[in-house]
Each structure stands twice: as structure tokens, then as C-alpha cells.
Length: 306
Ligand SMILES: [Zn+2]
Image (cartoon, rainbow, N blue to C red; front, top):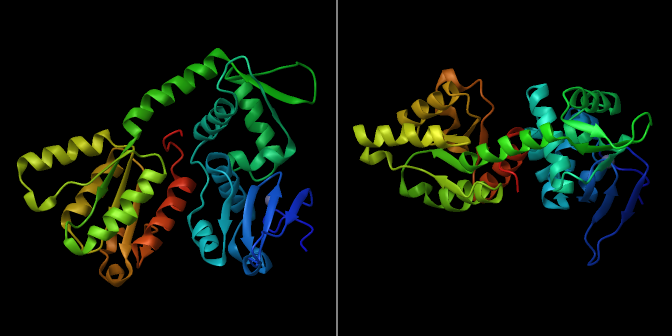
């Protein structure tokens, strides 16, 4: 039996075996959250897979939003493949405020943070996490329940509440996601069970694509308007359509998050200029869905609040 969390190596864990003879462990880790991991995945020498704190952060953030997740060697690699930290301190502090808001929903309620909570903010260790708490306090976004104590229990201030309100206002726009892709019937299943289904699962209740075959001046204006309205653009390069390159470039220019994808049999045709981006390579719509959900959760810090 395991005596520590195979992800963060914390020994403050509850480990049990799932019923039904699964070759897996159910882990309740105070740092990473609750997850089920297959024996094979748990026995892998994780250090080969990059910084573990990012994996711990990806699992914890997903647990906070969706409850326990399941990790096999396969899902595990896609999760590792897709983790990255918020890009700046403002986004990190927004994550903190959103967490307090999700936990309390009330300005008069507070949240206690412990040294096990650093993965919430993709922090490397507890010192980095406490540093963000201090910054948020200095910015008057949170306030401690009791001053002059080592206990870290915080309320959102009225300023913090206003910031949540701003994020929620933007959220209406953010609920739309635009998929730039080849409009071909051989991608209908990928649209329905891959792109659309992954976006719905991540809280984008308006995933859209526009038929590029009807391409004319009007559609082009419509595409530009829809991209402006979207919180996220997914660009799929299967079929190498010129429109997809245009739409991805336009979205990048507006500062929108763009996720790059391509079906495995078309990856060799990718244009030189976009090869530098880390494409999700997929073969089936199920694989596409799984990888896309992981990538969105790990990289899109302004995803819709659930
Ligand atoms: Zn852990």
C-alpha cells in the first residue's frame, strides 16, 4: 500500500483501494485533492515527467472545480502535457479571489488557508503561495480575519468583491468559444464529440463554428465579430485551411487565448510559422475531447466560473 501521495510525496494522505477489483488507489491528498490513480501510473518514476508541482496544481484545480478525477498513465501524460502556470501575478491573484468566492459566496464568510494549499495558485512551494496572499492583502483585495496571528484566514474585501464582479461581467462574453476548423463532413464527429463536447464540459455554453464554405464579405465580418465576442479560440489545422490560419492569427492579435490542434495524419503538413506552437495531436474524437479539456483547464486561466 502507498504511504504517501505519488504526485507531491506528501505523507498526510488517506489511501484506499476502490471496490470492484480495480488495480488503482483512491487518494485523498491535502495538497493535490482527491483523485484515483492506476497502479501503473502510481509506480511510474514521476520525476521524468517534469515539475511535479505543476501536476499537483493541475490535479488540485481540477478537483476544486469538478471533484475527484481519475488518472491512468494515458490521462496522466495528457495532463502533464498541458499544464502551465498563470502567465502573470494578476492572473494568479484572480485565481485566489475566485477560489475564496467559490468557497464562500458571501462577503461575510472567510476561508482558512494552510501550507497544503499552494497548488491552488500553481505556486512552486508554500513561500511563493504566502507571498501571493500578502500581495493580495497589500492590494486590499483580501483581509485577514484576525490581525497579528500566524493563522491565515481571509475574507474578500469590498475591492476583492468588485474584482470578482468585473470577472463575472466579462464571463458573459467568455462563455462563447470559437472553433476555427475545416468545414468537412469527415470532421463532424470531431466537432460534435470532440470540440463541442469538451468546450461544454469546461463551461463554454456557446461553442460555435461558422461555415467557411459560404465564405464571402458578410461571413468574414461575422467571423471577426464572433471572435471578438469569444473568450477562447480553438484552431484545428486538419485540412490546412487558410481561413483557420487567419482566424488564429486574428485571435492572437486580440490577445485571446488560442489552443492549437491537428489530427495526427495532417501534422506533417503544418505550416512552418505555426509549428512553434504546442499543438494537441489527436486521432479520435474521444482523445481530442480529453486532451482539449485538460489543456483548457491547465492553461486558460479566465475560463468560465462554474
Ligand atoms: Zn499530493
